[in-house]
Length: 252
Ligand SMILES: O=C(O)[C@H](CS(=O)(=O)O)OP(=O)(O)O
Image 1 (cartoon, rainbow, N blue to C red):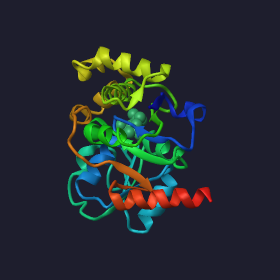
Image 2: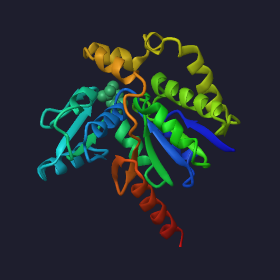
Image 3: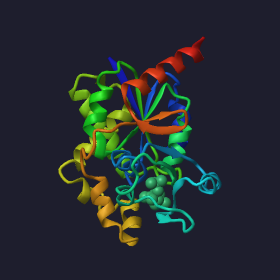
């Protein structure tokens, strides 16, 4: 049976890092929810970049670029980090995205066997796929500026519990167990549970209540974004085969 662990912050990632793992990166509020939304609405790829300078470079080359810091869209770019801005006119477009926490966490894990993006919005599709992989899983929470946050931990707990119920993983690790315990305290009403969370307070101040509701909604898409040559693309058999061949080549 596979093992699942949770890194509650990117700062702790080095403790858990194992290049053979599948890494599920999550940033519920809001980067990974926005990425799932963009791919669901037809974007060909989302290129996650860590810095505003990189985002500027892509903008100068004519890409559509989303850039957010501290919850606010940076003026010179096309989008911020609201999932609602990734619902229109993206058909077959490449989108570049930089956010305060999420895109950094994705890039941090880029050398792992596979990096996939998780959110409540693609929860069941992701769990079903993971349940077929027979490989250890690390859930990497993006947190907030290096700190722990509640919403990513709830997602980690929900996923852990689902994988346990499916018989995919045995919960031997304290990180996974504690995420699951926390999720069980929250699952009747995650929105209410997060009432006092720091991120919810931040976004509420910015009048982003609708975003929070959307990011906590389940199963809006079947798409599983997977990192392939630096881009997040919708997972399909061809992409998985290319990733498998690249991993084999790297081993030789
Ligand atoms: O835009 C967001 O929701 C956050 C902003 S912050 O963490 O409150 O500064 O960015 P994300 O990278 O999605 O956590």
